[in-house]
Length: 171
Picture 1 (cartoon, rainbow, N blue to C red):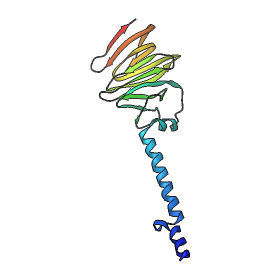
Picture 2: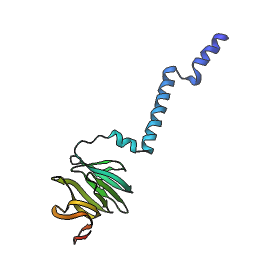
Picture 3: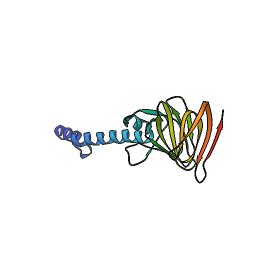
Picture 4: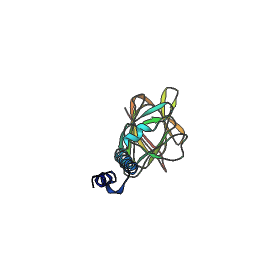
């Protein structure tokens, strides 16, 4: 009778020790993956991107995507992610992003816009492919590849690219 009791305890719920260990491991992995999905900032820390840093995403609202120079697809971006020379940034409908360039300039990328980050010598170069950007910059902005030099100290600007391009400068 005592021997039967020991056998019943070892096979609790009819599972062997190996099966119990597999279930515990599966539950642990499920919890870890759930946490990564709930807080995708952790995934950014795992993603390594090489190249010269053009700036950093300091604000993100809604649908903001980043594509590296050598990448085919777009990936969702988050506050704190680095922008590498050659990266393209896209903002969807009702979305915007703010990028602090490595020289301290700050660019706001409005909804339905796409920009490509580059450097011309030591100055930041931002190519606006479509949409609207604004901000403070000491450097060069391009409209669909054609340079538009913004000169002056801490010049404020608004730039739209579409059917008709518009450049407004202050400062």
